[in-house]
Amino acid sequence: MEKNQKIVLVIGALITLGLVFINTFFALIALIIVLVLLMSFRIMGDSGNYPLVTVELSEDAREIIVTNTGTARAQNIHVALVPLDIDFEIASLDPDEESGFGLASMLVEAKAVVTYENDEGQQFTRSYPLTALGAGRDLLEPVFPIFGRR
Image 1: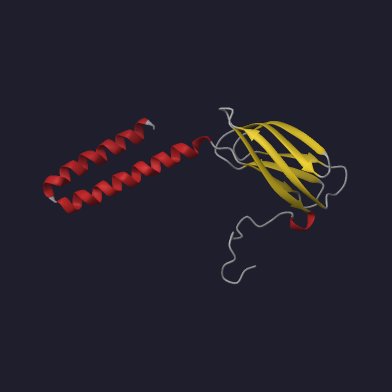
Image 2: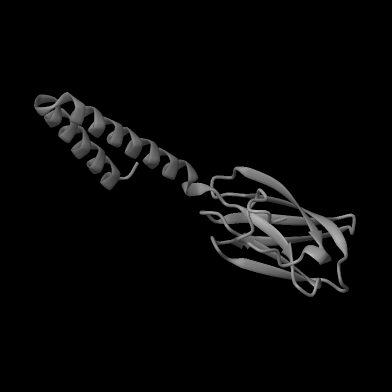
């Protein structure tokens, strides 16, 4: 936990102790706010070193686009296209950085299996279906169909 986060929690605890003498109800509200801040800081700390590498097919289906959408650097990225028997590697990608791999011909359908690791050496594996008809998907499309959208 960072120094500024600790200072905020200590000030919140002192305010909570001060409110105990004024009104117990207000002290309980302040305690809940301090606990919510503590949980938020813990979640922020856990997600601070998490790379997330995604693989998509370009609009013309002639290029594989590898993007790091996580919060940390992804290293030793290995992409295998199944069943095409095409493998390629990328040394590293910073957060929000992307890299492309050109194909000799258009890709109709395949599955990309990605293996990568973070700065600490923890290894991750993900797979993505690639299809020419689904290239360039809408990032704002909801995961669950809502409001009649399918």
